[in-house]
Length: 83
Image 1 (cartoon, rainbow, N blue to C red):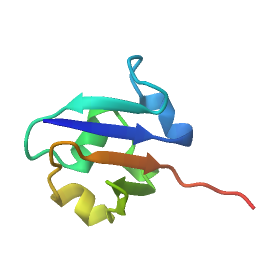
Image 2: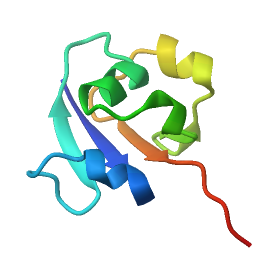
Image 3: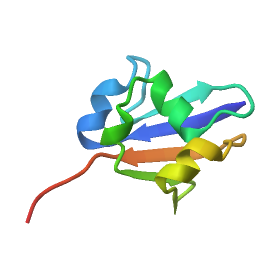
């Protein structure tokens, strides 16, 4: 099944060369979780501070347990500091 991974800020360095801007489309097996998708692209899970599935926040437990579905978009941001 096809899903889309969007990485922002410092996490963009984990995108492959074929990525377009900040996103990559991926073919993954049924049952793949958000954490498994992040591992595939070597995104450090501890740096995945904000993870959204189709615009809805996934807490750390959900990231490991909920299987992705065809067409899902996983968007990930690192911890950000500023003022």
